[in-house]
Length: 454
Image 1 (tube, one colour):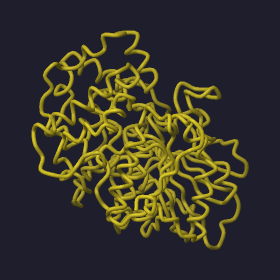
Image 2 (tube, one colour):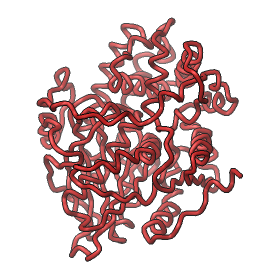
Image 3 (cartoon, helix red, strand yellow):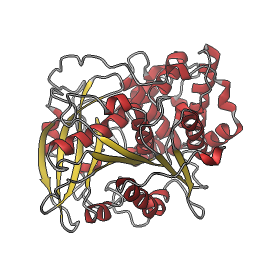
Image 4 (cartoon, helix red, strand yellow):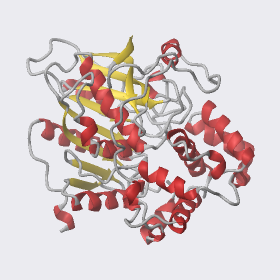
């Protein structure tokens, strides 16, 4: 998210949008509709490795977390073994989906007490079917970031802290989210969907027998995945659901690095057309100050349209803009997409936006319903943030902490030392969250993160 949107949040201008909080909350449990054979809505415009080609043909029949296919993956992590998997999940509308993931576990004999499961929710990689991090040639390694000088790829991939976690005897599972290898359109930044994928990834690893009798689990994520982690924290009924491939998960905590939490910035009250218009147009303009932010915003619009049937791209973009962007979303991952927009449009990229956006009440409801439900977290939450993060405003995490502490939750915010940006956050936070995880798994009570607000 842009620095201009950060200023909007800090100035409280988004408070012009009253009444959006009513749309928050977990969608009511529904009887899953009969799954049909998976078929892309249009011919898939990108090439996929054979594992993912097969995943495209899977129907999401089975229990949540049920593993429908797997294959071994080589890894250089000492004393570890890894697999790619495709498993059953569901989205914010409770529609069955297929997600792919990477699973990494220690070799050797299972401890009598079993192994805890750590679920990683990755940051933005893109919306096309070939943007899943598990598709990389050597995915089972530490976090590899495109932007960092040490990065070696056109996309972010890998799992932060994984070597230490394997040494400590944890099972690690890293979802790609639905649509990033499996069939369907990826619901980018729909945290309520992405969080379900992270929960069902735990079920999948447990269903493989990798955790033994242990039911303890932690979800951690960054950026888009930070939003997924805090969304999962408020999905207590979903976590407790019975009849899954791995019942009885005992969540020990949630770690969110620079999370995006749109719903926490919206004041309660009655929904109004004027408030919805101010909210949505504020988000769109805040995301349009440069090509990179505009690409994120366009993916968010595309992902929400995939999740909610009563909104569409042409509400926000011109007919030509919606057509062009839809093609780019289906073909390009994040950084290549941004480069393409820069090449093709330069400083005229705003011409893709409609001069008279419409249906904004439904758009506001969609953004909030797809974010974090106003429900007390089922376990402690810790947020790590940097003072120089201009991509996701730290004000979002602060608003989330106030909201959840007011509901009796335990949410801590840890300011990272130095001038940390959005992209340095995972590396700087790693030793901190590894200690925090170890303490939660050891049964040590989390500090009262809400005390600082009193």
